[in-house]
Length: 286
Image 1: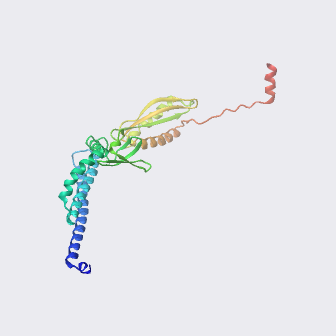
Image 2: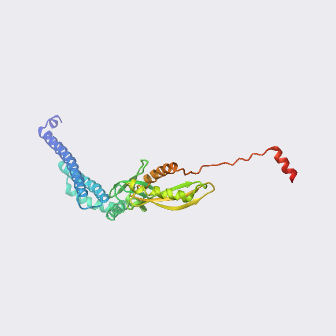
Image 3: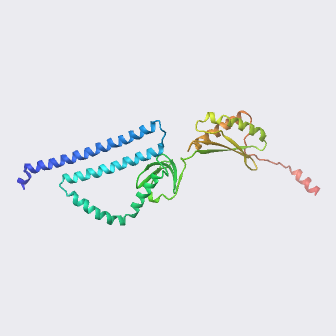
């Protein structure tokens, strides 16, 4: 036993194998990093080129190619490491074909996820950076893979969907959005004057708000209640910019109307005070 442990050739073989494994692992890591950088650089160059292309789609494909490169290089490194340990790779690959066929029947969900992921990317249903609603989750797409999709809500939660479970998608980032502002004014206000002031304000919206891409509009009276008249304003914005534009418009419109003496509605209470003698006089009259 001691003689075997003192065998110089054995330790040289073990050292050589360990060195090969380390070199393969380090080489795979460096190659993966280099390929990921090359993919990112190539797509960033295409985005900055004179020909305008779809940045959303490029970002999605870039993420997907990075994942594929990682998987491929990782598999190649695993095969090389097994070869370093004198494992019969050809036998494993031949057996993997039979095992893969058997596993394929039991991995129908996995196959469905991969096929659905392919069509999501091929049809450009949504891309990385889009704001979407998938099933009951709503947020920004962080990553699209062949098997899963990751969506982060604005409150920070990260939803991870198998692609086969993506049955209903609403994409808010494909087309322009509409900012809607409802303005409440008092019944005592002069509606004609209020409309003139609102139209004067709306003329300043597009030059002031860079997210607004067309002139804002006053649709008219949206609703009337016992205490207020509601007027609706709209403005077409860049995709997913309507929330911010609506908040800014409400603030600026409030200041604009305050400076011009337009009264906004507030709760009012009518109090009737009756003296005891008044009640007696009313009873006598009856």
